[in-house]
View 1 (tube, protein in one colour):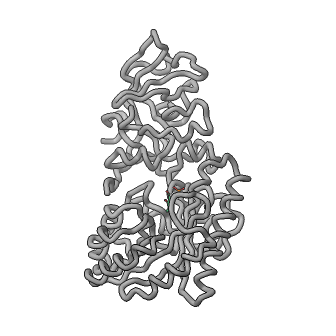
View 2 (cartoon, protein in one colour):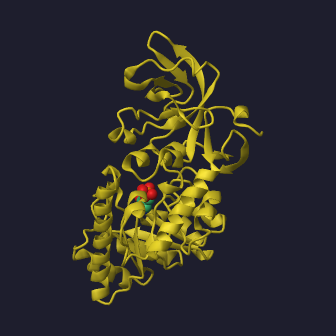
View 3 (cartoon, helix red, strand yellow):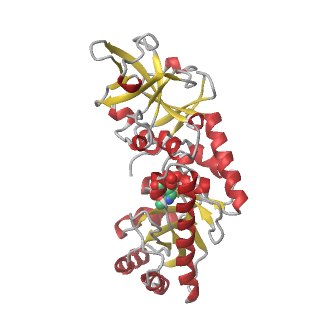
Length: 379
Ligand code: PLP
């Protein structure tokens, strides 16, 4: 198979040139700040992408599922942070990786769970390192930067015979609701300052805190200073998406992934064009709608992904159908989208859209396929 024309649609396409440009830019940005880049593989879930993302940096990687940890360990990665709150029931598969020589760093904000984690680790013959999760404004998980419980939790981890304290971690995911550099810079500074405050509380009572880990794609992109932070964990930057275009983290032609779809019908009465990429191919994520009135479920580009077709967008999705309309409620551009032709849809949220596919079809510029890279989905 040599061309996109040969692919069954819908299919996930990755532009290797854009990917490499995104990786190089973030690597240079982190090097400029003097912090390690520990890319979050929740977006790409691909060893081929991960190898390229860490090739020029000193850090390991971050993952969001036990399946990812297992896959990346099998692919040779030896320093993995599992950045989702840990519970004892997940210890066995991760302990197997640790016993095989992989450093797996875990995350908690739960004092009540320390004894259970310690017991599970002891029973499995491992002594994992734990990061304390800090909430610097997202409001999802973590202790407030000035919470006295940070020290109490740190002491409990250090006193547990089968656990070790690695430091603190935060994720400023609320940067996703900023439009433009000014707001993101403020969130990035709150992320940095809150995390450094938490690290300082541990250090003040003599507890170890070698890891001070922050990061989201917007804050990694716009942070003005990162002093006190040891590593950043952006993940979405490898591919970007329409949401990141709206936030201001990237330009449209930095978006490296798209969904190849076929035009399967014209509904002249409604003024819509049907494509074979619906909810299962694009996801129902509408995050970019916060920034663009015409985001819908994605922007419709030509088959080469070089220009948007008459301002068209996917306005509605059914399981296997996407319903394309024109700008401002105008009819879809029928002449530019004959039945049987192909389009590339730029996703709202690449992390979610990519999770629908087992692999990436690689292109460099035009329609020639230069490879296929598998992904690890599931948990
Ligand atoms: N760290 C954690 C804990 C996350 O949950 C995420 C994303 O959800 C990231 C890092 C990466 O952030 P982004 O997707 O903005 O690159």
